[in-house]
Length: 254
Image (cartoon, rainbow, N blue to C red):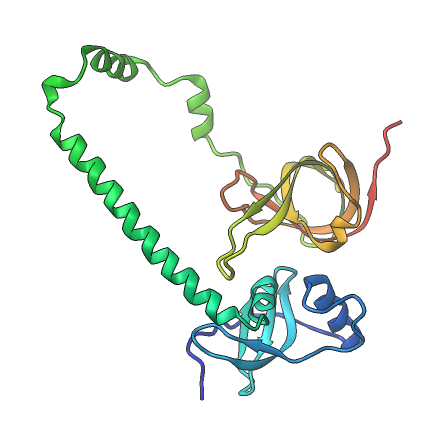
């Protein structure tokens, strides 16, 4: 029987051996650090409860699982981790009920606001408000506004791994379409490729367990090797993503 809900990967990376699979599952938090072998996992989305196997990954934030019919499906590791909880189905139902209640309440508030605006006659609007609105309309667009409209040209990024240097600007979280929890990310500034020399300016990466071991703080500068791609960070003006940083070292100020 074919599962119609699946998001099948166009391409993905398979594990070279069981050791690589174990290490990746530990990095995702699906197995404890002391685990010597993998375990059975279950997919509990879409009202189902089916056994599945972790067979690879598209990137470090997208695991690939296989069902008994060998059909593949992309899923965020933290979402799969939540599914392993015994009370997952109960929590999912409660969350859905809360969302329906919140939507109904929001609709009532919006209706009240619409009614209030409708009841306000045009001649009741203070003259001062009209004057302020007219002043804004008369003002020509500032140089700053024009600058925002001009998009920066896209960089020609190398396809292979490169050595880079960057400074930690911010730690934040972004929504994840595959999970009801948010992903932890790091935003960097003063980002540059060392060879070939190229200024990137800003970039981001996932805040993986490997990065957390470095105990980074805002203002820390580090060098590393990675692939960098054009991928905008959700809800942030950061256009480039750092994938799988390795050989990371903090740069000590002289």
